[in-house]
Length: 111
Image (cartoon, rainbow, N blue to C red; front, side, top):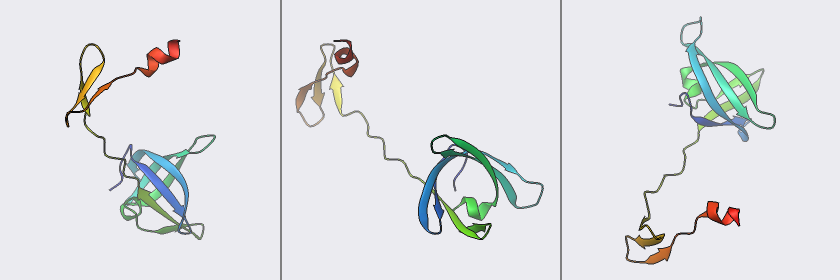
C-alpha cells in the first residue's frame, strides 16, 4: 500500500501523466474514504488534496470528472552496501580484491 512519503506515478487514461509524493492521508468524514494530500512534482510544484478510497490509494483505477486515473507506487532502486573499504590515504580495497583510489568530488571543485 502506498503511504505517507511514498512516490507515486499517476496514470491518466492509462498513460503515465506525472509523479507525486503522498504528503498526508487522513480519514474523510465519509466512512471508507480518505483525504490524500499529494505534492505534484512538476514545475512549479503543486499541492492538492484528492478524496480517495483505500483501494484507489493501493492502485485500483478510478475516475475523476469522467477521466480514468490510477496511482502506482514507485519502487526505488535498491541501495547497494559499501563497495570498498577506504583507508586514511584514500586507497580503496574492494571485497573482490581489486584496488583503487577514491577521488573526492568536493576536493576537485575547489581547484
